Length: 405
Image 1 (cartoon, helix red, strand yellow):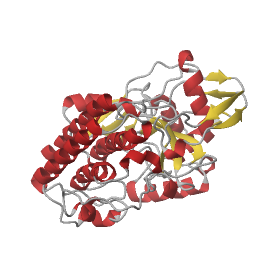
Image 2 (tube, rainbow, N blue to C red):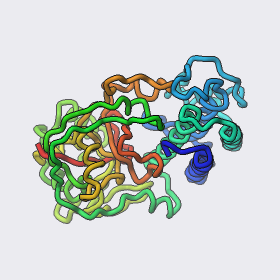
Image 3 (cartoon, one colour):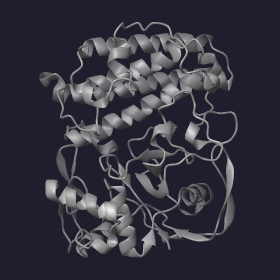
Image 4 (cartoon, one colour):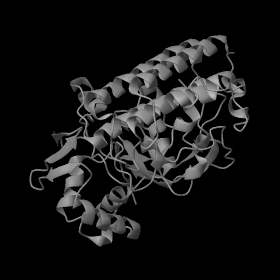
């Protein structure tokens, strides 16, 4: 999809909108009677705000953007056309509507939000029919497609946070599959070209390409499983400060005081002897299989497990090289987002794209995750893609794998 032309992009944009509305339908079933009221949490947005923002972002960068044909060379501060919704910027401009205020906005009702999404998509598709075939001309259509896919996944993990029940097909789709376990892979020393190259779409934090020498290393063939993680819990991992970085231990003590935390998020019961894990999945307790990837870990927990096991989290370059070079040897990714040992920083030669708030504000504070999860749309999955969150986030569908020291 990063090099998709107009016809394929048109179909994908329709598919993304259908997926958005399908997921939002789950919220309507559960929350429409209470006007979509949800707790004010730093990790989520009000559902109606999130729905409207998806349409706003597409209209902002395509329908209202007179420089859309310039692609990455677009000047983000230039004046735009008026929105078809007079209050759209006041409601849904994420750069200027502080997160904490989104619960008190006079948002339109669900019917009006759905109509806005329909109108903005129609406008986008009409403009796409008339646009050129160059990568610059298609840049914002690709960006808006991937942006909607990201928010679709956000709807998925927000439903998990809120404990919303899902229809059985979605419940099954949003459950990690058991894995065939393989021995760790020994990767030979190499020089890896890190980052995305060429004229096709790439996110700004993936550029520019630069060579990194990698010594020989050993990396897990798949993410750490529940069976492996239960051993850490059974060995007192949540009570032994020596396995935790100081900031991680501080986080754990605060979580233990407020939540009684002695295991990963949403875990209700861990059978140390049996290895059984009961984890609440979309409001329902589920027994997790020992060969499923361990899920909903903070970076602190992932790092602590590695210290306990005498291992470490991978560097980004190690993960990326293994994903490309060892797929035929059983390197498995895409089940859960995987924490890297790497702090999110710009690559050499970084230059922000017109969507200035995407990467630049988060350098130095967030940790990198690589791969994808079961809730990530297939077209967004890419071995060069860099996801990033604060180390204490565990509401997302995240796990980890390890490397030898």
